[in-house]
Each structure stands twice: as structure tokens, then as C-alpha cells.
Image 1 (cartoon, one colour):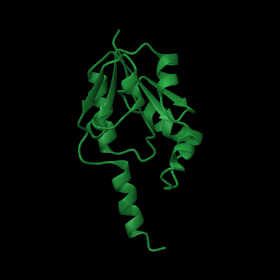
Image 2 (tube, one colour):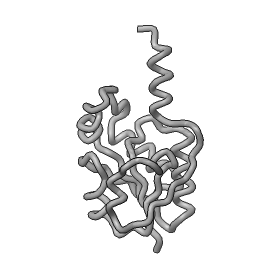
Image 3 (cartoon, helix red, strand yellow):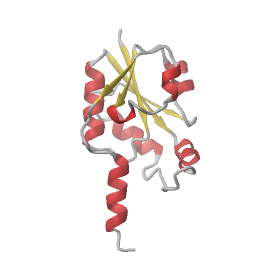
Image 4 (spheres, one colour):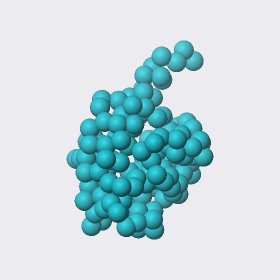
Amino acid sequence: MRRIWVNGVFDILHVGHVRLLRQARLMGDHLTVGINSDVSVRRYDKLRSNGRPFIAQDERAEMLRSIRWVDDVIVFDETDPLAAIEKYGPFTAIVKGVEYREKNMPERWLDIPIHYVDGGATHSSDIVDIIRRTDPS
């Protein structure tokens, strides 16, 4: 069985996420989505100070479980997914959005192929920026 891993915060679910998940599932027989716990996001967010996550981890997991291409959702507390990938693996491949191709991701340290897919031009950080610019407060 070809098991695929995708991970992220997924606190602002958008069409780019849906496209990524669909393409990831087409690469294998089973798609596991790892999501950063609320604690993990807040720990990481201290570096960026943008107030995330906006949606609690249980609700994010519930939304992802409702997507037909997703077979499992794992919530992890670490700021990177390495321990979760090793605990819940083995995985045949890791799938990331193309915007991560040039980033120094910890997943590159693993001996698992990484595939980059284009979910489109929508990104959560862009949506947050638009909302913040239009907020009258």
C-alpha cells in the first residue's frame, strides 16, 4: 500500500488545500494528514506574531476528516512533523505545496521522496493579510 503524508496548520481551509489533498491522494492508496496542534502553532507563531491558529485543532481535524481524499488525521505537538512521520509511518511519499520547494524543511532530512504540487495561488497567509487590511478596528 502506498501511504502518503501531508502536513500543515490548516486553520484557514481554502481551495489550495483541497487541491493539494486531492493531488496527494491520487499519488497513493492512503492519505494521512498531520496537523500542528494549537500548542505547536502558538510555539512556532511566536516567531511570526500573527495570532494563529484561528481555528482550534479539534475543529481543524474535523474539517479535514470530512474531505473524501483524507483517510487519517494526526494532531502533533512538535513544531516540525518529523516525530509524527516516524511514529505513524512508514510513508511512501511526502507531499508539499510548490511554495515549499526552496525552503529548508526538516522533512528533507528523511529518506522519503518529497513531491511538490501546485494547489494554485491561494495561500493562508495571503488570506490573513487581506482580512487584516480590511478590518476596520
